[in-house]
Length: 402
Image (tube, rainbow, N blue to C red; front, side, top):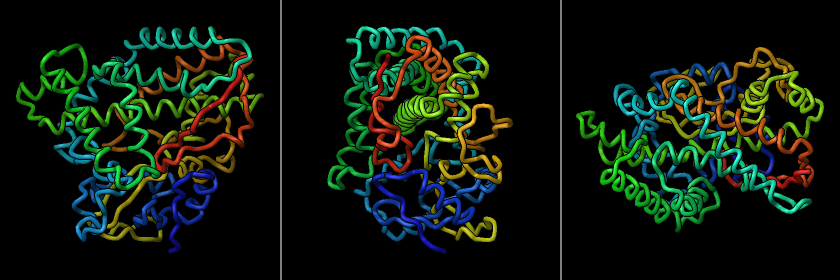
């Protein structure tokens, strides 16, 4: 099996995803830093493995970890071993940790946030409208970032004064270019910041999910301080990064497909179609780290060996022709059916999927209603990916609002 090295600079994500698909449903890959693992790259096999009880989250199953081959200053250590939370456990422990979060993020409860999301969106658009006419704007920094960060912070009870420090630390957390000597301190700083937030909520609880987690631990649900801190960090990280990319990627897709942009702006095609096709075609999450095989597992005509690590390459399987037909590589908002798994599948499916869809469903039509003549300020070919192998994330999105 030929090993495919994932590019730490993410210079050509589409090309890399095509090579992974061509390698078969199970590809042997090398993560930045020289760490070996396997990737599932086809839709059907991904669904199978994401519900296979032989594939677990316990890092102690990983042979390379047991042999001491994974250094603590590996740039991706925070994603491979983020501490105990619903992301890193299975079975009863996973259900126990996930239940409170899932209850807070049901479709009905998320829908109650709509008015607040609409108000935040309007405020962001007002700020954009107040800029001097003709000025180039970074739509990611000025619109796509503030909305989900403010929404998830309000949900979790995180003060906006912590946003600059969170942004700085998460930039390092996700980047493959963080110098190894800075990784341990970055991880410690993130842990300390979230521990401070939890301590503050313990002293002054509010109507937020962090306070609810603390109350549950005090009422016999047996959540440890580590589990509460790590759950908070997980939800804040996942709750804003995915939505930023979804909004940015949808704008780029519409701007580079003007006929389809006309269809949605005229009301011929609903915005829901734009969101689902963006999730499939240019998924916010390119690779998810990391699961481990407790025994040999057959994947197509190959075998994921016992004790080896597995990543899920969502960027590759989103354009799998076996699932989406011969036009899988095309952006098509009229695609039907459009059964993707951009938010995962099985027990670890993202509990924040409904919230992300709602935020994009509010933000995108409001943006185009306010600025129907919006244009990219540079050719799409000149847009640059950030050096993050897990997130499909642009450095910036320069636009002219018109």
